[in-house]
Image (cartoon, rainbow, N blue to C red; front, side):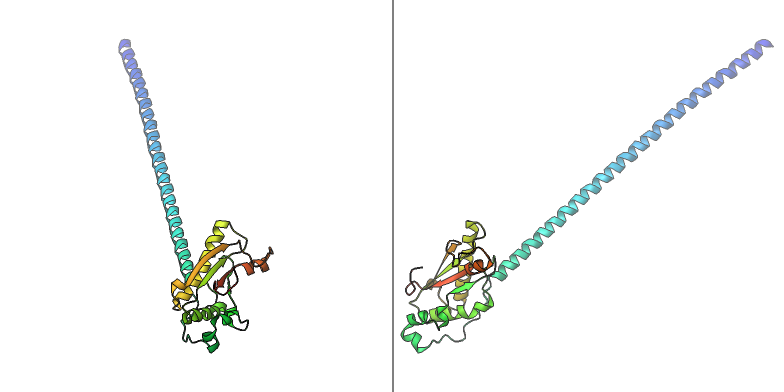
Length: 228
C-alpha cells in the first residue's frame, strides 16, 4: 500500500512540474508574439510618417513651382506693358510754313516744341510717360515731313547700378522712343539708337534731383545739333 501511495505522489509531482514548464514556454511565446506585433506597428508608423513627409515635400515643391510661374507671368506682363508706347497715332502731320521752308530753324527755335529733346523716366523704368506724348508726336511729325532728316536717340541712366546694367537699361530707353516713333509711321531707317549708360550725366550731383535729370533719352539731330 505504501508503495502505491509513493508511486501516486511521484506521478502527481512529475505532472505538476511538466505543467509549469509548459506554462513558462507559452508565456515566452506570447511575449515574443507581442514584441513582433509592436515591431510591426512601429514599422508601419515609421512608414506612414515617411510617406507623409514625402507628400509634404512634394506639396511644398508644387507650391514653389506655382509661385515661380506666377512671378514669371507677372514679370512678363510688366515687361509687355513697359514696351507699349503711350503715344497715339498722328491725326495730322502737317507742319507750319516756316517748318517747310526752313526746317532746321524749327529745331533751334526755343518757342517750338521741337526744341525740347529729352524724355525722362522713373527709376529703373523705360516706358514713355504720358507727359512726354506731345514731345514724341512733335518729333514724329517733323521726321514724317522731312525724310532727309535723321535722329539719334541716346539712352541714359543715373549713376546707380553696374555699368553693364545701365548700358542695357539705356538701350531699352532709346529703343522705346524709336518704337514709339515707328508706330507713328516714321521709317526705322531715319532713327538710330545708342546707349551711354551712366557715362553722360546731365547733372553731376549724387541725389534724387540729379538722378532724375540723368534718367532720360535725348533726341539728337546730327545734321543740326552741335556734336553731342
